[in-house]
Image (cartoon, rainbow, N blue to C red; front, top):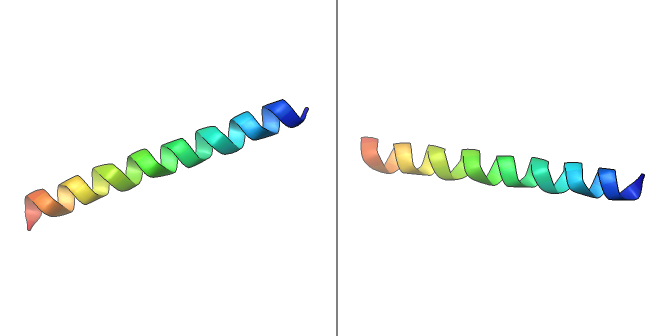
Length: 31
């Protein structure tokens, strides 16, 4: 259904944002 597709897209976007934040934090700590 459309609801499931929207949920998956939102979850994928959320995971991508979390990974991006973790990478940024590691880069800041290493710098």
